[in-house]
Length: 185
Image (cartoon, rainbow, N blue to C red; front, side):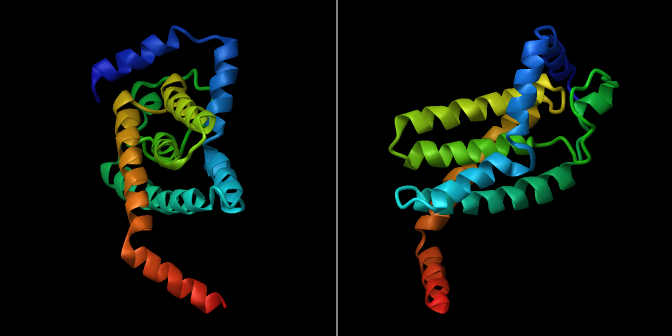
């Protein structure tokens, strides 16, 4: 654990206020249990214009689940910063999983990457980009992740987003999708 990272988290605590507490609790809750992302996937999958993006986001969801939640968090096993330093002014309940990397950040970065690269709507691109940044910062503000957890979460998320696009565009995926569609008929 780097003391510079704890220094950054402590510096962020200097800007805390009731308004910001409520704001960042709301922002971070959008990533809890992937409610926002499942909603977005459902909305996208039911619209002709965004169905392809919805399918790609769904692929990235499963990639995040495997890479971040199963492989990285378990293999690295990094304790959360509030546990490491005995920080007691938490605004959320203690979390049961490991700190590295930030899953909230990874999921939001991967979905934002997909939408920014593929959607035509500029307002939608700005919305998800800003939301992804706010979700990432909320994890620092709430003292539940180190800055490197968030940074690596963002990089992994962007890579997963690009990877999900590549998987969707691959001949193997199209062949598999074709077989599934034939079986449904």
